[in-house]
Length: 248
Image (cartoon, rainbow, N blue to C red; front, top):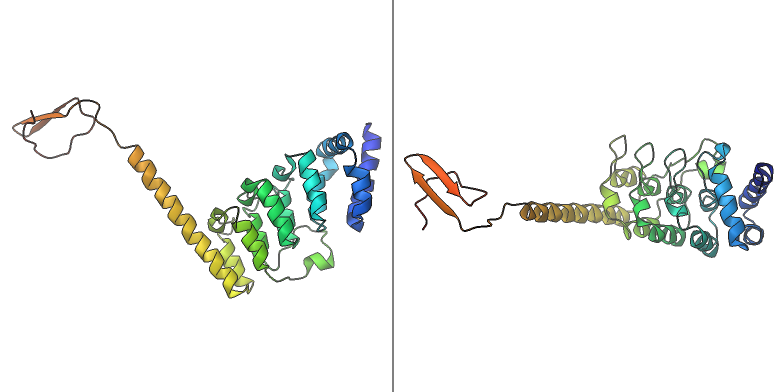
């Protein structure tokens, strides 16, 4: 596919996506896996797209689940792709108030994207918890309008990563704080707080387990003796700092 033909094809597909004409999109983009991969590759090498993929563009318009599922099936790496702002398709979906089932589909396909931070340090959960979230400068009036924090969307994200609730952005704000500022429902705030607590508990347990695993272990019987105030050790990797009687 020549660069000229590729650009024309990309423009047509983006227009179809903007119109949310999913029947035409299925026919034009998804009917031929080889063609879809070729278009995906062309978009990736297009400077004007700023790192955006077709999946970034599609999830912004709240598409049918089967469309997104098919795209990820043909190009499994798409959920992990980041645009020039460091945003994954999950960031865009969360910031565009996509349906909770769509959020769950993308998050489950690539759980690591739940913890991914963009250039401002924000995760998809930050976007989902911020009622006044504005993804792009050219956002439509509908996209710019304040929206309610969706409990089911938050739950979908936390189901794949509770750790995301503890992550702070560059303004040192976590998702819980954004939810409170956005007047999120009390049950949503409580769910975020519980997720944060459990995440910290898990982290603490892991650190304790790591600490125990790194303790020096004796490889030969311990023989410690002391003469006057000097402690001498043989066959030991660690000696308590106290006077010890000779151990035979």
